[in-house]
Length: 614
Image 1 (cartoon, one colour):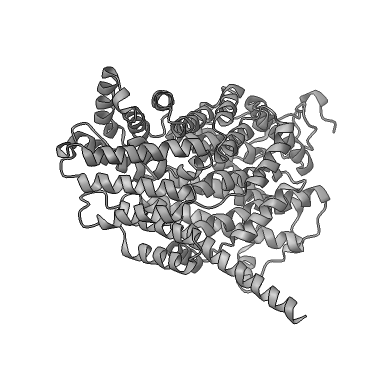
Image 2 (cartoon, helix red, strand yellow):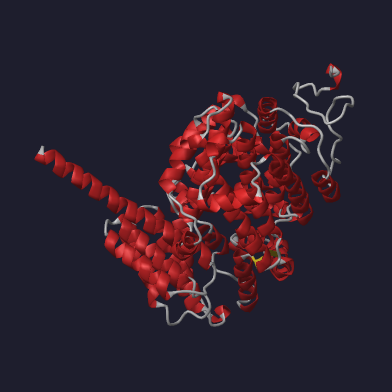
């Protein structure tokens, strides 16, 4: 029975299967806003149309090219007609809803993403291998025969794993209490098990199509690699708990698989690239690890030839330039990213955030404050952080602060706490820290000690600063000048926080010297922080932070045993201080680096001995 050619979407000629005759064509569209009740109806009704796998691959490739060329409408238009019947179209549409949800934390957008994922999981379940009750009991004793899976069943399992992972992240974000976290964790566990099954399918199945196998392989690599890398980054206490319930993480294996995935012809190769860029340029910076900037350059050189105006790759190019201390080129690239598209304002906000800190590193405080103000006005992520940051940047002007700007700072400090929010049922640690700083500002007669430099240090920007020698020298001079002025001037305005302020200055001085590659000088300053431990009134977080930086200095000096011991003692001795989580991640990362260095030295030593014997 012939199908009308004009009724088939222009980008493909899908193979349609019907239970009864009706004019062929795409199934009814979901509404533009993806209302949850319509998704629910779609999940419950018996779907009459399906699309063959090969055509789905081809349409998804076209949609991805449009997506990375900033044609978000075009990409969505390819996905929408089949998002309620096709595995890959449904997953693609879910991802398009997921991305703005992750960027905004907007509850409405999170609900739309969850609704889309609910439909996607429903479609996956229709095509996954189904077991009868007897067969299910049998799989507890004997492993399923993965070699008998069809290509469609295999891809359904893979898409299910991916959708479940996205749903788990959304559930955790949406939850206002521990229940959301527990639900999300259970979904992550189920997703992990699905990826393990996918790896077994890949190893044992005879594929109907080589293209199908390649795309499946890239998906398995992306999923298992991401799990391995992310789990390996967690502090030991959490890793022990995860391993107890069946999780495990191997960072080296995960990164190797991501590199292999990005160099494959699979559908998810570009997602492997984005994961690598995010890991090396964002995550490594946050945890204080060394990112592989060379592989980032390789990826960006390749993709910017294909997508010269692609906002994703421009964002990461700007980030790479920033990590290399190329401040002015980074600002130019971020502005190109801002101008490249106007559909998702969240990308613009990320660029504003980055440009704000680049100007901070250049000590152009007013220009940095301009971008903080843009974020205050346009972004809904954390107005407390934006408000305090703008005030801190303006206060950094010191004697150059104008009368109107002084009043503005007072208003900002007074209002910052009103915007405090809860995400995943908890307040943001940085928001809580900044609210304390606002209270200190009021207590200390509307004064703070180097508030913008403190933020640069806490956001781990000093290692970036050190890659620009002149900027690093300027910041170091500012810290020393402020310390001398504090020593010479009156102390009444500090209202009993003299030791706290002195400890902060010594800590900033030590961190700056350490980042500049002067560990012996840095140790003198950091030791001065520890000498004030019994006098510090409120800023007790400076003690574990200083200890961690002391360990870094000993690591640079080659005394790894001492560095490891200091990190171990710091982890055991200190708890309950401000911004504890980020320091725990950084200490864990540093300990891994030290252990990897020791293992590498042992391996090289064994090789040398073998060569000598030969």
